[in-house]
Image (cartoon, rainbow, N blue to C red):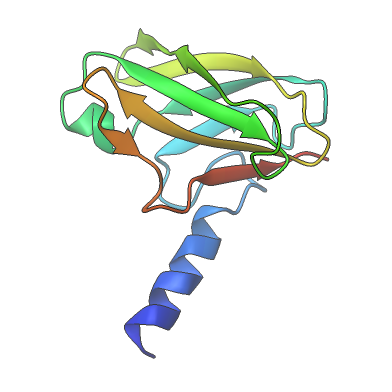
Length: 117
């Protein structure tokens, strides 16, 4: 299997939302699955945290980034960064993360999406 196909399959695995976290466990959320209108707790324990970030921000929008994007500061709780957002989309929550120095964790350019049911 060539590298392109491996990367493509790995990206799709990272967007699997059925168990409340992505395969690599950098991101988790509750409730799982979430529905439109739910308040969703998002927990981040990824690259920015591992790189020593003092602060992490969730950058998010809905329905393929077709609504105005918002950025909120996440609270540090133990080894994780956590925040809650209202799922105001019809079909999906789109998001990525940045730290206070404007370093991004955007899932290798794919961002993350969580389907709303």
